[in-house]
Amino acid sequence: MKPQELAKELANAIRESQEYQAWEKAKAEVDKHEAAKIMLEDFRKKQWELEKARLSGEEIKPEKEEQFKKLAEIIQYNPYVRDFLVAEYNLNRMIMEIQRIIASAVGVQLPEEENGAQKNDDGQK
Image (tube, rainbow, N blue to C red; front, side, top):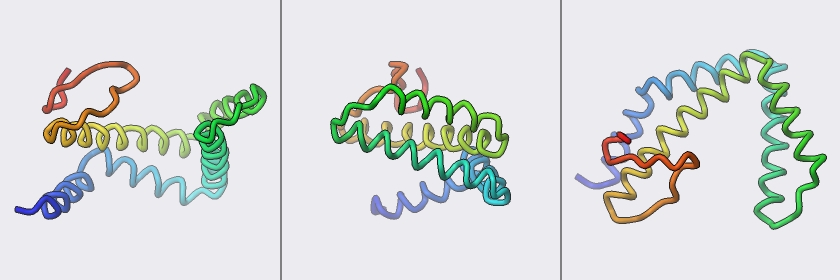
């Protein structure tokens, strides 16, 4: 079987996963609530601006960092945005774990997760 065909099967399995289902449900909830949608879009915009500045080597002013931290705290009070971000985080962790398994199988070393916990190909520590 071609790797591309297996990738399609993997994509289908991901769509059937609990993580994806939770993400899709949370996204639908955000989309139903205009205030939550605007809040999330604003958060993403500011997050991207900071990341772009970091990647280009710009010095980030402490005020900008503090503003972003305050915004991150504020959005946690919106249950739709908070649930979406948690679901997105869990989905991304699963996808990163899959990426690490594939990379390991073909001999490519990826950077370790921030917590430094190594896992084997079965996802176990």
